[in-house]
Image (cartoon, rainbow, N blue to C red; front, side):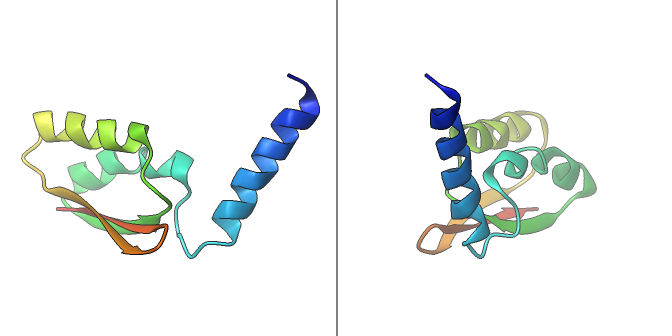
Length: 83
């Protein structure tokens, strides 16, 4: 694989996020869960939930009695609701 391949992939991912209505990108979405769960609540929109986001939800649920939901509110736009 060459640099052009990685550049193309990165540009496509950036364009997908920037052209969406999502407030949080897919690489930050999973990282915000723990602070929001510890704070007791929060919500944001993101792109299609990654496996990492879903895994973090499952792990947080094991340790905290916290409701975390994912809901597709329009095609490709998801609401993450904590608390």
